[in-house]
Length: 621
Image (cartoon, rainbow, N blue to C red; front, side, top):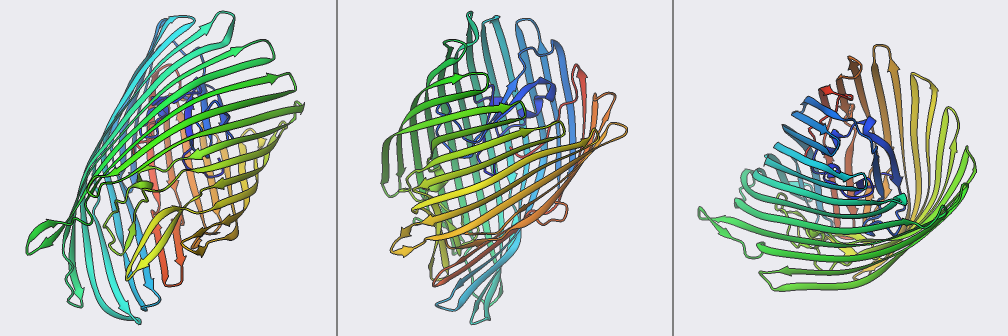
């Protein structure tokens, strides 16, 4: 996926509670339940046009094990990453019942440092400190497949999770003029939050008698996420005598999403397949945010920073595809149309924004197999990336009053045309996959930093176009039964063109990344895995982002033919996975540094019934 974020995970070609990023339910799927995994870097018209990252589609075997299966897992880590999880599955002739539940505690410290310099006034504000995000979490997933007969299946699943957060932090601020310290103080944050979330998934699948691939599928997916958060910021002067008032913030946030889909697939004959369907998606979001400043011992609401933001988006999409496939070659054409209606409202000012647009998303994919060892694929698709709530909401966090991030209610969606040519070579011990790709994006979302006195404000804007051309090489080499290597190399060259408020932001740049993983199968059912990756530095629209190298180590030992598994992993062994961003403008120099550090996790799993032990990661929801 070329390091992209926002990759969509599907189960049997559709969204599912099991694939939800906010739960551990994916851990209830073991390797022996999977038929295949499809990696789709250039999705066709059948799939939602949202996003450009791609799709991972997990195809499950139709004939799962009957009887009772289950697994229990425990984890402990440094920093705290402690959890326990249980997965259960009961399969009969007509029913398949599955559940997964777990609980845990996790701590995520981050060291952060920033420099905010007004070069015109020759003043600068420096800050550094450690921020924590500590969580207690609880979750449960329950679902069932009902096989009405061998042609009709109903699936109903749901999940619920509850998180209790605390986010203590201590940051030291210093203000200097001409290099001389004017004042310094400590800013302590005490944040408490509760996050309830739930999701449901209802699906009906009908297979027709003439062909197992002749299918009608209806699915509906709903989800809710809420957050009630309160923060207290206390300032303690160290030098200079300036007293900054203490502050309180309160946030009440909710997000409800509903998706309804109907898909129909009909193989007309041995070579031709037609697909059609539709989707209706509703996104309803609200955010109430209030800031209070302490005045004479009393906290008074700050009307300039307090707001209620409402966001409502509806997307209606329909698609049609036709494919012709013979033994050695095939072609697939598709067209998708999506109507989007978006409304936002900032209630305290009455500022509203309505957007309505109809877009068409064509796709073309073809492949040719020269031999069992070599094949090529080519594809084109058009994609859209719509602004998210935090891109649009003027709300900002006052953790750092001098470095503010906020949204832009007038932000419009960006569009991308993606072209790709791929060659695949498969030998006995070596497989290679190389791609040449070109992505042209318009209305690009970029975050621009502007300076106002000693305060820098960072907000997203639509800024011109980006053309990126790249080469990627993936490979796997298995010299022996006990040793294998997998690697990835990606090199991209991009050209940015755009202007904002009379300033030209055009520039060119290059970026590359690589990853190498080696796996050793040792005696006594023991595996060791070493992985390292590197991301180069890259020029950004106002400055640059530094590169970094990192390494991970994992060890796994199976007991009793896989009934039990012991594992240990070390993420970022040398604590080198850092983020450094620099902004250099006419009157502004801005530097931000953050580092999570090393994470060590110990785990054990045990299965009962059939199958190998499943794992519960205890990750943050």
